[in-house]
Length: 262
Image (tube, rainbow, N blue to C red; front, side):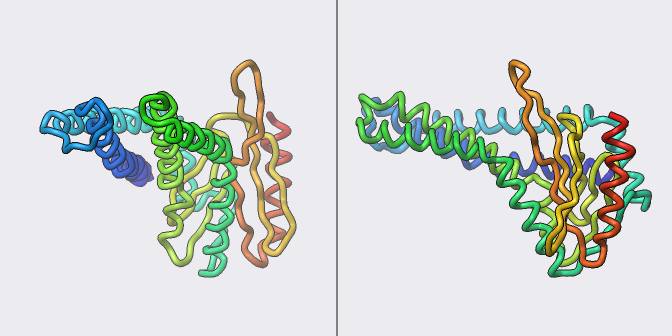
């Protein structure tokens, strides 16, 4: 399972690569147009600009690789061991999904991910407003708005793309059917990969949400600046038809063995 773990981290690095390379090259080209002409006129950038773009791209790729390696090296051993146990069949619950259920489960995960990016979407909206204001003022008077708005759009947009493209739920859509193995620490999607429930904060609640289909929702507590604490929905798992009783038992076990113990 450690081989799978390494492959997953390389997948994250490749995601960073394919997201940032075109963004940085494009941004450098557009930025170079204004820098070279000085008045916002459009001229072809010279060779120095391409060299600068190549150097900056290489730097970003190196930083991306370092971040991935740091995450790989610092990822708590208990999660790696948990992946091994889940792969070996030692789980609290293991559910198989047919084609329709797997598609629905991936839609539930995609909706959860969109909710988790709500703050980023607000920031993206603010950046768009700044950019529009700058364009309306003109390049000379509004260049600060254009610069700040553009940087925010590139940075926030790239972050959203990375989160979306590197998520286990995104890669889970590669399969027509699938399986989820759940432990007290996380869930292993096959295909898709492993996701820990509480890598950045303690588990607050595990709830059975009745419906058609039913779901099991995991919520954690995240701490921010100045002691601020917010709820974060770490996982939203669809329950296959006929497994509702197992899901209720799973929730009861979490409440008795994990939440009360903490």
